[in-house]
Each structure stands twice: as C-alpha cells, then as structure tokens.
Length: 367
Image (cartoon, rainbow, N blue to C red; front, side, top):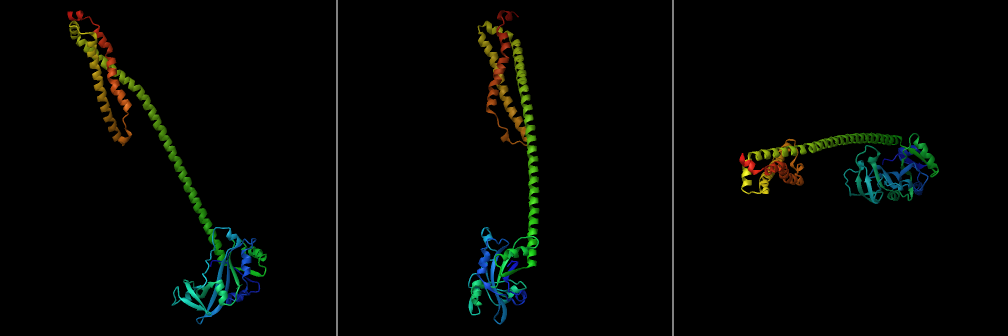
C-alpha cells in the first residue's frame, strides 16, 4: 500500500504477527480517535485493518479488510487519501489466487458472496495470496464486528530518528498501542523524497540559468536595437542637414542656369525684340513671351526630375532589399516640386527679361 507504519495493541507479539499474522484486536473506535486527534501531526494516510489467516478453496490465504481514514491534518490539505477504498461486496484477489478467474466472477469466502473487482498483478510475495475486502465485510466474515487488529499509516518526513518522534506523539493519543516502522520502506521513501528535492533544485537552477541567459540575450538585443536606432537617427540627421544644404544649392544653381540661358536668349533676339516693339507690341506681351518660355522649361524640368528621381530611388531601394511599401511618395512634396519649378524658372528669368523690354527699339534697329 505504500504505508510504512504499523500500529497494534500493546499485547501483540510481533513474532506471532510476522510469522502467523496473529495480532490482538482492539476496538475500531481507536482508528477514529487517532484520526480525529489534533495533536497528532506525524501520522497521515491512516488505514484501519483487520487481517487473519483463513482456509479458502483448500488453500491457506490471508484475508485482509481495509478502510482508509482521513486525519485532521489531511482534511486541511487539498490532496486526498493515498489508499483507495474498496467497494463493499467486492474483493481484490491476489495473483496466485486468481488463476482461472476473471473480473466480475462471484466467489464465496466463508459463506459470504463477493464479486471480483480486480485480480492483482504478480508481486512475488505475500500480496499474491491475499483476499482484500472492505473492513466491515472482513469483520462480518471473521465474525469480529467493530474490531481491528492493525492500523497502518504513513510516517512523517522527519530526518533522523523518526520512530521516536512518532511514538512520543502516539503515547498521548493511544496509550494502549505500540508502533513499529518498516525501515526499508521508510528509508526508500526518504531517499526518494531527497532525490526528488535534489532533482527539483537542479531543474530550478537550470530554469534560473535559462532565464538569466534569456534576460542577457534580451538585454543584448535591446542594446543592439538601441545602437541601431541611434545610428539611424544620426544618419537621418546627417541626411536632413545635407538635404537642407544641397536642396537650396541645387535650386540656386538651376535658377542661375535658367537666368543665364534667358540672358543669352535675350541677347540673340535683340533685333527681334526691337522689331516687335517698333510694330507696337506692348512691354507686357514681350515679357510674357520670355517668362512663359522660362516657366515652361521649369515645368518640363520638374516633371522630368520627379519621374527620373522616382525611378532612381526605386532602383536603389530594390538593390538594397527595401520593399516598395517603404518608399511611398509624399504628395505634398511632389506638388511643391511641380508648382515650384516653373515659378523658380520664371523668377530667375525676370531680370534678363526686364533688361530686354527696357531697351530702346530705335537704338536696337540702328544696329
């Protein structure tokens, strides 16, 4: 059952108990008295037991009646009893006694009918020749109502001399009993608990190490991200400053170029301008010719610049692995470019045009 303590009547001879399974019985109320004691903290998973050797089908078998009982300390915990109760009227049959029988078969034990609930696997020991039933069924079969002859239990997780601590507590609850411990089983349980604790400690250390490594990786990734973000910010600031310097310079150079071309055009067409003035063309009409031509050149240059610029940007972005979604055209800047180019060209042509219309047509025609 996994229990490691055996509580019997003080008059029981352990030699008779171990060899012939003979133990002095005592009232079943002892079990309830033990389970309900609030001062008892070292004993849990109590099992009231009545066992006796009987003859069954011309064989000597051990009839065992059990009833798990919850202690006060267990009732305050969420875990249930480690021993499952046996349904009244059913029997668990040992491996050696279950040949040629099946679960659900009916058998008789000293004139009482039972249904086989389970045929136990082979243990290679006393369990193979046991018939295990409910405690009250065993009391009825053995004609010992309200009697038990053993209380099995699970001892505390105490280190060192466990049994002395348990005996001291038991004396104040059941003074007419004595207790013994299955040392091999108790030690095995203790070693298993220590092994589980060590394994849990090792796993916790591993988890903590993994968490620390993950935290360090996260910090490193965050630091890398912050460095990259800072580098991008610096690049953007440098690019912004460059644009703030280059753009006005480009516009100024373009304006000077347009102004120079207009001035050359005016020089080449002095005779035509003089002839138009002599024919009666007004100053505004002649100025509109030159300024309109400049504005047209500016508009054409703006359109060509926008188209060529978009093609170059997308080509560079594709070569760098940048998707087109990240290269959106700014409509405001596009509109300013297309509207500003002819305006700048017209402004650049203003002075050469003004010099053209201010010339005396008579002086020009004399040439």
